[in-house]
Image (cartoon, rainbow, N blue to C red; front, side):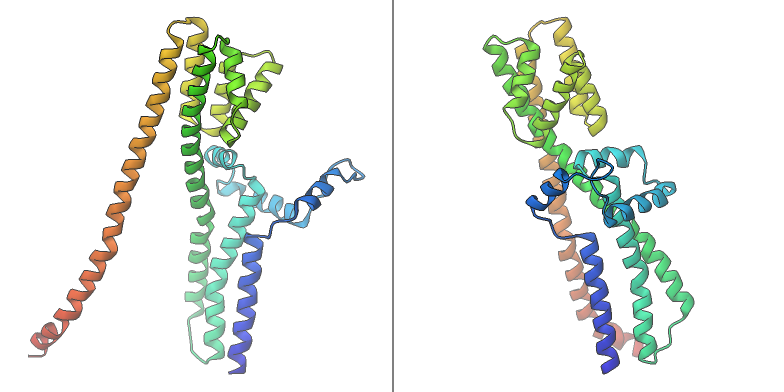
Length: 292
């Protein structure tokens, strides 16, 4: 009894520490600002222990595809650093590898024999499977962010059309329209246009660079449209509203498709429950036929 309570306490503390490492509490804004404003000997912000662990983990996981271009695009879209992803992968891998060892320890104290080879295999498989969980979560969040960006681009194009209707030029309309929004897509567009303006580059180059960073096909289409509108200048406003309407229709089609897929997935638990109910009803008859 006492041994079981002690093991349960140790395992609970391990889970709590793992959860805290994966999802640390947010620090107050005042403390973060004081760290940024605090001068150091090297002139940079003091590197914390979490930063060092994340850097070492990122270097260790680099041969396993951590620095792929797709991962870099998803990290850029979600505003997450490579070190944070490496720490999450390290924590999930240790959790998956430690669970079979914890079960084996409990079984050993309760005098239940479990093959050590089975524990080793389960630890390797569990650690490998949970190692991929942060990648799946990152991909889902990046897909949601790009979906949000599609809606924001459609609203941005409507604003550009309104500025063009008011007599503004193309470049001024693009910059002023980005300044009206506070969403992350508007902020990224405003930053890209400002950098292009400082570098004396056309707005189409800014959209192309941002499309490569975020992996957005909508931004690539917008860059092509801006380049075409700057050279030809024919029917700019009508084509602009048509493109915005096309983005909204595409987003609506994807939402309807996702809703239909969710409806189909909801029917799966009902089918499984009905199959179990049929098995429960038919088992006595099957057992009677087999025994006879």
